[in-house]
Length: 286
Image (tube, rainbow, N blue to C red; front, top):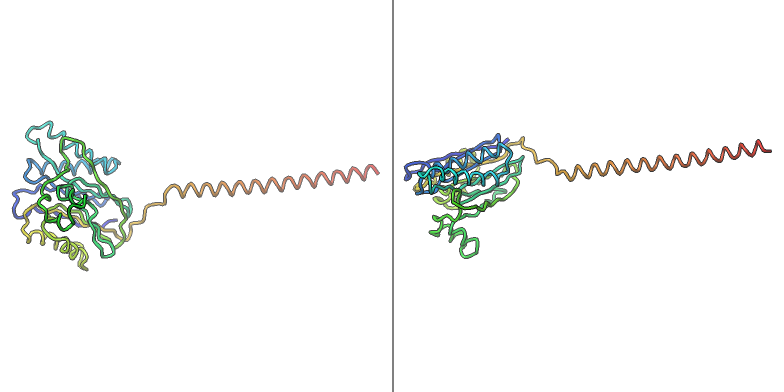
C-alpha cells in the first residue's frame, strides 16, 4: 500500500550509530529516533523507544499514547540500571490510516511534506533555537544557524512528564513525506532538501542523494531518513459514521411516509364502505 525507502548511517565522526529506525509499511508506521548525542547509552534509549512505539501501535494504542509509553519505558529502564541513567532520545513517528496520517514528535527530529512541488516542515524543533523561533524572536533562517540548535528542550527519558506535539494530514498520490534525524537536516540546507525531494529521479535515488549530501557536508552526526509515499491501491478513509446515521434517518423517514400513506388509504376505504352500507339499508327500508 505504501512506497517506503529508509536508511541510517553512523556518519564520518561518531564511533557508533545512536539513531534508531523503523519502517513498517504493513503497519503503516515509520519512526526515527535520535539518541541524544554525547549522552550515555543514547543508542539504547533510541532503540527502546522505537520498539515500544511499534509494540503499542500493534496493540491498537493511539500514536501519542504509544510515544508517551516509550518515554516512561526509557525512564524506567534508567531507574532500574544506574549505568543507563541520563540516557535520552528524540523521536518523530508517522502512522497512516489509508491516505491519512498523523505525525507526532518530541525533540528535533523532523518531518517534511512535499505536496504540489511545495515542501514544508510539519514539525517544530524542541530545542533552544526552535523555542526562540516559536516566539518570533528568530526567523527560520536565523534558527537554522543558531547555536541553540544543539540544546534540546524536550526529549524522551527525562525525569518528568513530556508534551508530545502532533499534526494530521492527508497524502495524495504524488506527495512524499520525509522523516529524518538532525544528522540530515543539520548538515544540509533546506534548498538542498527541496532540490532532492522535488527532482524527477526515483525515491531510492532521492534517498541516496540526501544521504550522500549529508556525508559530503561532513557527516558529523548519525544520519537517518525515511521517504514515504502512496501506491495506487491506497484508498481514502471510509466516510465518517455521521453519514451512516443520516442514511438511517432517511430510511426511517421514508418508512414513516409509507405508513402515513397506508393509513390515509385505509381511512378512505372505511369511509366508502360505510356509505355503501347506508345505501343498502335505505333500499331495504323502502
